[in-house]
Image 1 (cartoon, rainbow, N blue to C red):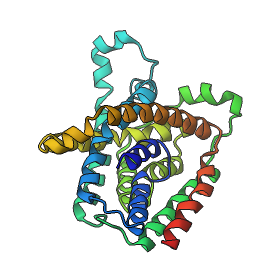
Image 2 (image 1 turned 30 degrees about the vertical axis):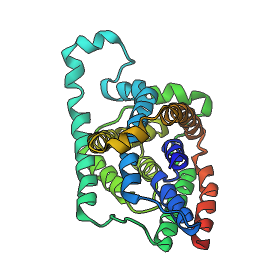
Image 3 (image 1 turned 45 degrees about the vertical axis):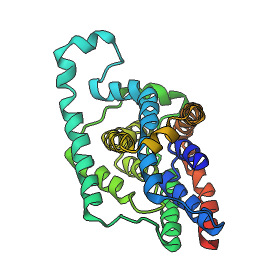
Length: 280
């Protein structure tokens, strides 16, 4: 359990489907004769959304602030009414996107305790296609040296149409092996958002869902004293903190790859889980 928990934290920052890789590990464990409590693993997966939320906030805070307030971060803006007025449209945008995502979940279409291997392999293929497609979605005509300056001047419109499209893409990623990050980023680029804004929006619309999952996990885990003793063990907490730091560094690496239009490199990596799943 400790191994896949660490893997879950690390892969959460990468566009390769963390949930798909966890299912793949369960399949490997089953092939080797190890029994896995799927209900318990899903519960702990919810709790691990807490570190993921902290990582996202630390990395994206200044970018989200610029997108919402349209100014660089300044502590004085916390005390200005105009700052909170400017948050109304982004909040509506995120809520609309997540309502569509929740509708996907409630429909039961994407509920799989153990996905068939062919379906998981198909999901990995979809992720690979989405990642490779980002290679050809570079609509920016500016030079790489001007990237940062131009990106700071580009604003997001917070349109309802885009929120619904991104929410649908996020819900589609509930299917086994389909990366939420890769799908929403690819769709964001298709909607003509800049690489930086598509990257930030992909994680912004995920935040309420991550928070809800984390709260659900914490509430449930405290009802089981045995799980509390296992989860809050010194070595377990040390591993989570250490892997969270590495996960943050991976997110920085991914951000650099996006800046240089190299996210599609991960499409080649996806061949590995696809082949393993097919062989299983």
